Length: 205
Image 1 (tube, one colour):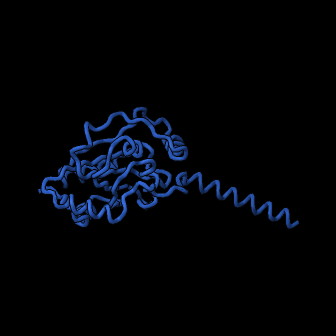
Image 2 (image 1 turned 90 degrees about the vertical axis):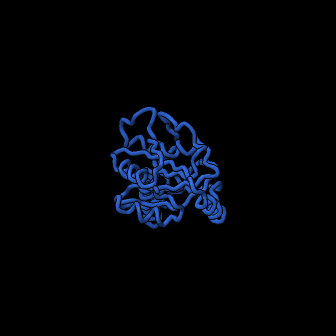
């Protein structure tokens, strides 16, 4: 009888674990070792804050236009250049395909890349939250460019998920990068206070 009870308990545990992993395909990922330390990021922030003419890029992936609206508002307030991240092959079944990409660490091809990242000191990166993670397409964008010497500021649009739980998937396989000021945006009214809190002087003059 005890063996049957233990087997049943183990079976229930495995089913629950499988269900959790299905809902959270990036559950066990951690932040990459290439991420700048807090001290390194602070030094870079000070350098960039002191620069009078900062170039800003607002890159985003939007599936239902919510992230697009936030990105456009950030661009208006900072004067940053907008860049939309698009898949080379449009999603046919986004529910199934997005989970597979995240779970298998697939890097979908981008429709196009920005001309050059070199002029920018600050890069905002925006995305919806899928499966408690960042869409793999956004990770493809980060994987394809050199973000060393730049501040990466992530923002996401989600009604419930925190942005912190998306960072390991967002930065998966990313090169050396300094990340700061990440924010989950629920509406455009949050943008001005958020930009001000960054202390980088990003507001358009």
